[in-house]
Image 1 (cartoon, rainbow, N blue to C red):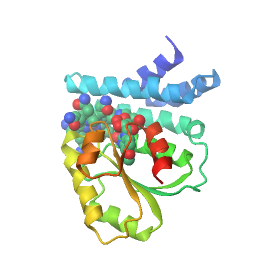
Image 2 (image 1 turned 60 degrees about the vertical axis):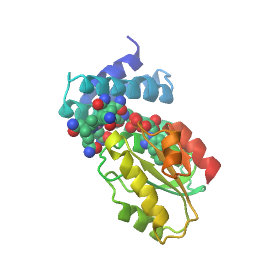
Image 3 (image 1 turned 120 degrees about the horizontal axis):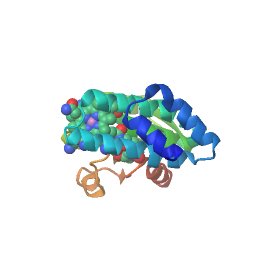
Image 4 (image 1 turned 45 degrees about the vertical axis):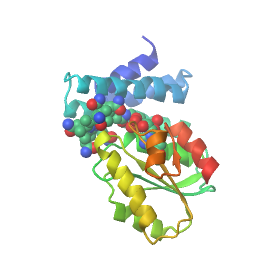
Length: 210
Ligand code: B1M
């Protein structure tokens, strides 16, 4: 078994105590940080999601796997975030109201930060008024990024875009949306300015539209 397989298994089984050591060992052995993230950890979370869907595991196991992944990502962070200068401007980031998933959002935040943006992370389950107030407090914001992981919170994504666009804040920023169930077609339908499939493309798209 490769070190990356071991990392994947540790995430899947929620081995919180050993994950940091395993990730550090993999880095020391020369494994690529993106490979550890994509193949090892995100692959493992997909397996966790599949097992949950099939009724083989329940919410607590899913939560422990998520906590394990976060500990692993903490070790990877310095290897993934290169240019935290903030020189590209401000990027407000939030998971929409009703949605508690934040691993993907946090990865997007890390990659956006590496692309040179100053990330203002409002967290999860964020009400539209809070997002609008953050924009009001940061009138020079370049991009507002909204994440949703559930098909049931996709409407909240649409509501958030509509609320922001219908508000009285100065519209000198772009709105980017993403999350596993979100597609370019959905982003177009709700009037978002941009869509990104994953954290890497979020950083690329952000640089293009800022
Ligand atoms: Co949740 N959950 N969950 N869960 N959970 C999913 C999403 C699910 C697909 C599992 C499944 O059934 N197969 C399913 C949704 C099904 C659907 O919507 N049709 C599901 C469900 C049903 C639920 C609950 C309803 C379960 C319940 O209570 N009965 C509940 C809802 C809670 C709520 O939000 N109100 C729930 C709860 C949870 C936990 C709290 C236990 C935990 C989250 C912990 C946390 O985030 N701190 C959890 C987890 C861990 C998952 C899975 C297993 C993993 C999610 C994850 O972190 N993936 C997930 C299954 C899966 O994804 N395969 C599942 C790794 C992450 C890196 O990927 O978030 O997709 P992702 O982010 C990617 C891209 O989507 C993109 O870039 C990221 C990095 O490349 N991206 C953006 C994300 N945001 C972006 C924003 C952008 C651009 C790109 O621009 C701004």
